[in-house]
Amino acid sequence: MKVFAFVAALIPGVAAADCAVERDLVFDLMERNGLTLSDRGSFGQIASKCRIRGMQISADNVDIEVGLMEWRLKGLDLVASGRGQVSVDGRVGGLRIVPTAEDPWIGYMLSEQTRRNLIDAEVQAVWSLDDGALELDALQVDFPGDNELSLGFTIAGLTPRAIAGQIGDLAQISVESLGATVENNGFADGLILGALVGRMAEVPGSPETVIDGTKTELARAVSALPDTLFMGNSKRAVLSLIDDAPVPWGTGEVSLVAEEGLPVSRFLVLGGGPVTPEAIGRALEGARIFVNYRPSATAR
Image (cartoon, rainbow, N blue to C red; front, side, top):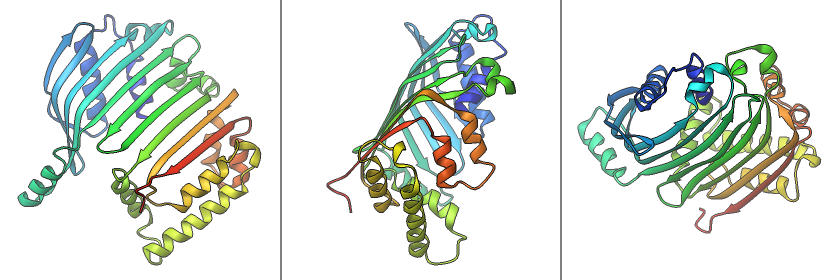
């Protein structure tokens, strides 16, 4: 949704987009999402790319250091007309996330522990304004150690009018394809467990009992999904992934193809009632899903 919010911020249009305008849009988006720019870094334009070095951002309980952020954004000035094509090619290098603490020694320890935990990322995307086709060709994030994320998708009907909230156009948005690969060998453990604790801490019972019960319910729900949704051994792979939860080590791959497209409205309906296997099956009707999971040799 933050990606949509950024695109929506472009709708009013820019007469002559340049690096300074694009930089200010990025900064404005960050601040409107609760981030504080404690240091905006040094800004410049190298060849055809915009570049920021040494940016520092503060969020809830973390400081984020960005060694390098550079991008090439084409077609920004076409958004207001709704005609043409917008493309972005960007990368982030040397990003470091440091948890903050009031105690100076704890803060020092956390900073030293993350000193070499640098994250690099690249993104390429193309958006056709005329028909609303958005193609995320690649989003690749390289985390410290053997940990990585890659994502790509194709969405149809995502016109400027739809993003601006025109209901008739919103109903035309659909997902045509989706592909993702996640490799986790420890880096994501804290994120996963932190989210689980925040969500389930108030559920009665010991943590082990609550997690085991949740895994059992989730496995039962997956088993009840129509076999026609899954290609090959995909359902078995999902069940194996659940069995290794909550912090599976290994590589998971998922791809979804829907020649006729999956209307986003189907998933919005899911939020209005119980999420049953039957409801999920209806939402994904017409899709072919492939899932593969390879546990790491170092998995605990």
